[in-house]
Amino acid sequence: MTTEAAVMTAEAAAPTRSRRSRRRYLRIRAASLIGVTAATAVLLVAYVAVGSGGIAITDVARTIWIGGTGRIIPADFQRTYDIVAGLRLPRVLVAAAAGAALSLAGVVMQAILRNPLVSPFTLGVSPAAAFGAALVIVLSGGAGNGFLATVAAFVTAAAAALVVLGLAHTKSSGQITATVLLLGIALTQLFEAATSAMQFVADQNTLAAIVRWTFGSVNEATWGDFQAIGIVTVLSAVIIMINAKHLNAIAFAGEDAARSLGANVTLIRFGLIALSVLLAAVVVSLCGVIGFVGLVGPHIARLIIGPDHRHLVPFSIVTGALLLATADTVGRIVLAPIVVPVGIVIAVVGAPLFIYLILSRRTTR
Image 1: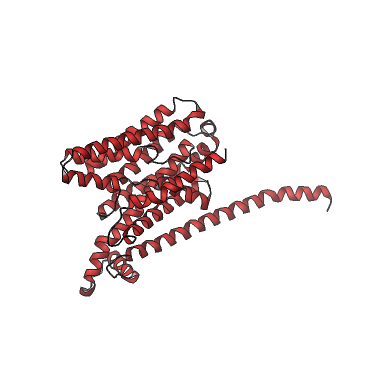
Image 2: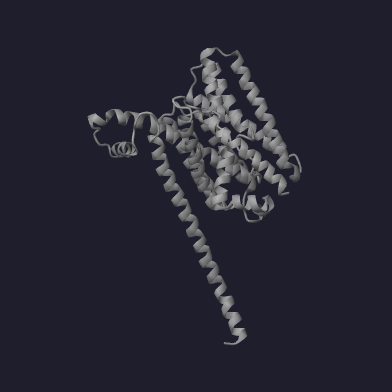
């Protein structure tokens, strides 16, 4: 074969190799996602068995089987079934769903704002949502109302997000990142101060209810909480995955490049930010303020699966779910029989990592 013919053969084979490499890449990513998801499901079942009730993993699996198939509960298994199905299983599932929702909100905010240090907590969205929920508690005399608390949490969270994004976009492109973080810090302090002021004037019952929000806890988790968070998370994930390629364009090439590819950047930005705010607001209204999951979850996923949002988004959901469920399990056993609220546990883990991310970004510039 002549040199010319060899070159032509190599050029013709190049697209084939590229397609093969692409298919191999997709298979590896899909296998990684399936494997991590399966491992997370197994760990969640194991977490349900953790506690002082002497419940084995086989008891958890049996409870799930009976509940899923509608079989009659044996009399000698009734007590175990009630503990698992009524207390432990909804608690673990709510923690996992809340972690998935917050991590999903975080990965979207980081992509839209092109800033890996952004999350619902650092933007002041979570403290704002907590203030809205606390306001409903105070006005209702401590009784509270789940639906009204969710609405109030969403309204105040949306207002905080609009203030941050609106003021940030009045600055030049080079100042947006710093402006977003500084405004987030300012709003966090403002809403935390407002929530503290309500605690100061509240009576004993109302104060206890507000403190629950500020700690962040799944101690009183119910199946209704899981359904609410799960439905919002699944619907939001579907919409976000549909726009994953646009997220890639915005995050990696910028808004002008995304527009050149046919993306309606304004609609995508505000639509997906609204979804992120809704996710954070629902979690805060049901579980209280839980920080750092929206920051840590996406970073863990990015280290494992890479930055492509077509893979990063579902992987972030899984890592967020595993992260918060693990934190809740640690909170149940670290000072047993005292249960440490999950918001405290995740802050202990998240704060040092947040500091590390800030310092590592500074040294890479």
